[in-house]
Length: 476
Image 1 (tube, rainbow, N blue to C red):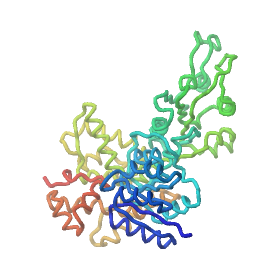
Image 2: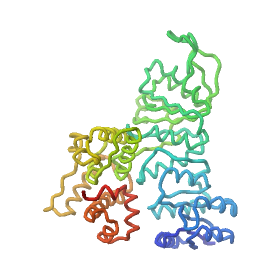
Image 3: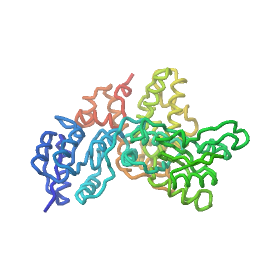
Image 4: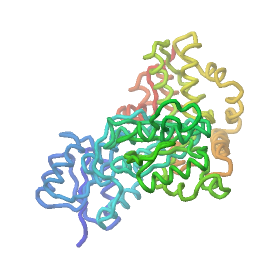
């Protein structure tokens, strides 16, 4: 028999698009605008898979999931939401959702998720508690990070966080810890690159009195300090080969001994490691044990560089300015031209570099508003080197845009940029266009919406999605 898909969303356009997609896929479709209507359909025994928004007129779609599962144990519920944060993704797992897709979602991906649900497959979402997180970003690249974190939170699989320096690898490790069953237990971090090679084994496993010269007393190592919690091994590629052998033995046996000790102790810790190196290449030249690599790399989690998610730059920059103000530094805002300048930079130091720049400008900039000139001065020659060619009116808009797009692709060298280029570059065009309309209308959103030819509610949503501050765009 043909499967029936229930769509619960108060947005008529979303219902229409999803309904048409499901019909094309060969399914029967039922639609409802409310949580009450969804519950009624399930109580009547109708529907095989549910696609539900989070915000419904009469309730929260996430809160509705337990009621649906009580009525129909084993029902597969796919959550779609414009509240695309890690907290939403993890809360969806807590309530028993089969899958979670942030809006705007790919209809083909949604169709694949429905097919997997009907086949009895696993989308990777299990039930577990979640909470808020310091991870910030609504970009498609970060949504993939959120979805993978939500999948690994409920279990104790070892996770390898991969990414360039400054992308926030320790924040990811902390999110995995804080949202999992080990929350409230110790989170211990050890940077392999910051510890002398001869002391790493002692740092990891502890030592007994007299174990080596200078060991005047017994000392607990990181494994002992992290009992019941999570041990984060940063820059794992810098671990000496001798310590790698001992770490492998711990992962295999679940026990460790202190340096100079005889009694084995149980290692009840979750291991999350991180590196900005190519560990597979290190295994090929004998600098990293291949068997340890596969033990640590059970779940690889790739963090995108900031240049691959420039739509998140305004939100991150404002967040760092707010944090600086909360710590007692002068409160500052960014004008629209400053935001454009920030998004044109390639950020070789990633999020850490952006944070440092915002804190520096919070101290050094005299006015209340940070300008593009201040951004350029703060970044120095690096900004000028990466700025695309300025707009040449004689070339026309299309030719100028082509130059910017070519520059964007060139920034990744021989590699391709992350998937989702279409939406990402459209957002880059939307942002200055909307900002210019708000500037021209002195911040009047009704007039700006009319000038753009869109609904005012649509404009408000775009302001949120694009990280635009309507106040900061007003002419002074």
